[in-house]
Image (cartoon, rainbow, N blue to C red; front, side, top):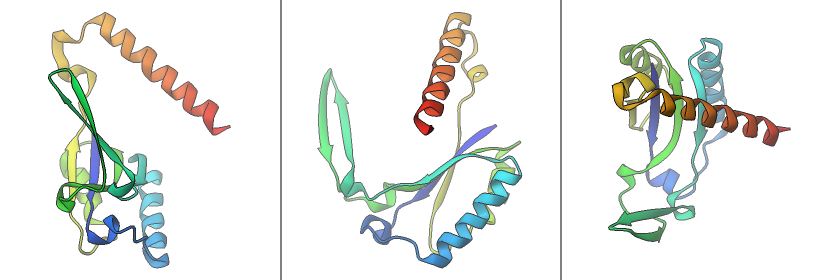
Length: 143
């Protein structure tokens, strides 16, 4: 099972405040534990919403809205993608994170089998091709 772990933004992160050296070291140690346990697939911090944008889709019209966005509690400051056996295991890992005054959301990622018969063999093959090409391009960019 894969879970997206969403670290909520706060006034400090939205203000562009960077974590101090202790927090960076603590988070680095925690991330190392996740990787050694085979849990962490990806993880990054996100810059403030003032540097972002939203695209609203409505009745064929696309509207771009530049940040910042007002509702800090609804924004994401960072994320992990974890692979674990259960939501309970994800929660246990998260309890070990070096946070103090933060809210973190855990959401299960859909797997191909979750879509049932609607996810035809042709769609599965397409998905496999897309993932393989994305991985190939990521490897090429990292060289």
